[in-house]
Length: 376
Image 1: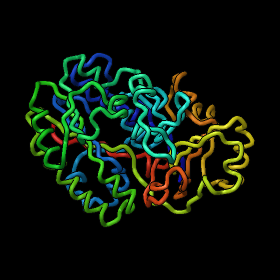
Image 2: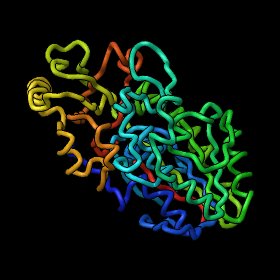
Image 3: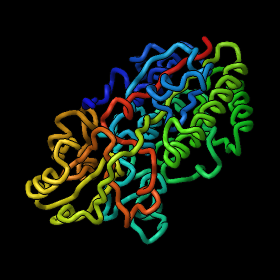
Image 4: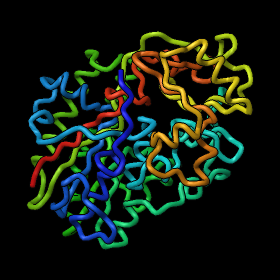
């Protein structure tokens, strides 16, 4: 598998909302994707729906497969917290600063999905000590839209309301709690008819969950894809005049092959202060990066892309610019898995260590996500 650096500013998830807002007259928004025009838009993000997976299983998603569209890149790492922040802020990883599933911040290791301490001791809520609006302080694209008079609606699972990730990455819109597929279709339809200019963001996460547990392309995953396809078709059928549906995703997914357990393999933890990230991308924090690099490469060899923080930044993995307060969150070493290798942690990520499907790295399977348009 060749390394695919995200196409920030040309064809990446962080370009979706600004491109749509350009057609709604929001100051500073630029349409680099060629999708501006409709004044009422629903962006439906299907967690885990990689471009290549969709094309491989097109018979299970006839409606989605019929739509005009192309592949864009998710951003690095290709993981939910980073990608949702890219969509909501309209900025690459190095600017929004949520540099992975977990990372170092404020003397803690932060699990950005749950906004809790990243360790094996259980859930410790960090919303008070690591205030989401301070961890991610830049104005979101949703806030910019609302400030320009666009009605912004967030049609999301009810448990996402007030979460650290929602506050950090998706603030600026009115929250509309969803209980199921029927709720999602109904609330999107009402949202799109609520004003002359509307940006509605809707999210579905179960395809990703089934991909993790059973594997992408498995029978349960394919059944869920069929349900997602029907939901997207129903949303499109209910679009108001001048409305559009834009379907995208936060990452693709690979089926795990070889597993290397970072908590048990000898030598990999020597000289390492902390390890964060997830099984396909690891942030390694160390005071002796040269020694640790040598040890990790002696074990992992060409099965990974391994870069220092400076090398990863210079190569554009996190975007064309990395803000000063974001730099320390990136590992002293960044390790991205190639092929189907997964770097699991049996002690800290006991449940995730047994996952069949994983994502995060710089392969095309993980990086490429669909940008599909229905309506005007």
